[in-house]
Length: 323
Image (cartoon, rainbow, N blue to C red):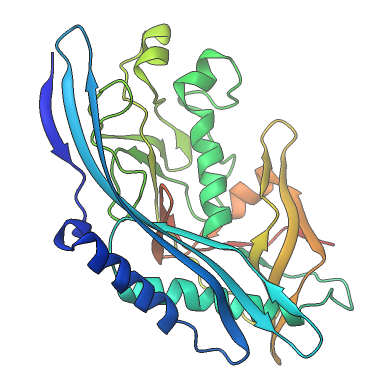
């Protein structure tokens, strides 16, 4: 039996809720410094969650956690039309500079979306993925090592097998954890009341452990780790390419298919970097062999938090087709 009260660390507890909401709102509007751009709509939500789990075997646990959400509609008003984007930003640690940077980048992107056009000529250059796509790739690898995937025989990788067939770029390393500073997914315990710590699941490009809930751990005869919500990926050594390269800003969704050895998707907005300057482009797709991409991928040394992910902000890939 376990009993106790827990709190996920957050500097939100240092603020009154209305004070924090006002500070968030102020930071959001300060980020709009782009001519002809506006925040069409902004909503701020500040939450304090109290969760308690009790069962008939003496389990009685309570946890408190905090989060905030900003919903905004960045808009760019051009001469002939207006373009809008939807922004939902979730966080659990107040840092005004980080918040302003996040909103400013979205204001830049809505302007870029207004002027973006399909490339005149086919592109053949390195592709740089940003944090949303990098986190999705890491999540797909992690899910393959979840007890539920192992139990249903849907996993491709087994313990002791290589996720990267060759390591010609940066080795992949992944730790699943209960908490990451700034992540809205951080928990002290999961839905079964199981206390959450951390476990290394990928080391030097090789699967070394499975992880998962009490239920599927019991099915497999493995020690339950709990439903670990946070993924921590190792930083890398990448430097941004020189000359001609494509930075993916927004996709309709990164598709990762281990069984068909595919990675790719439709690109809604990208920045084509050239020696002459940066050109916003749209109307393209990228694709490649997942095996080849994982073998050659390089990750940025700079890290950030995105949802339940903490890890490299960018990944450089030299062998994707752009069409």
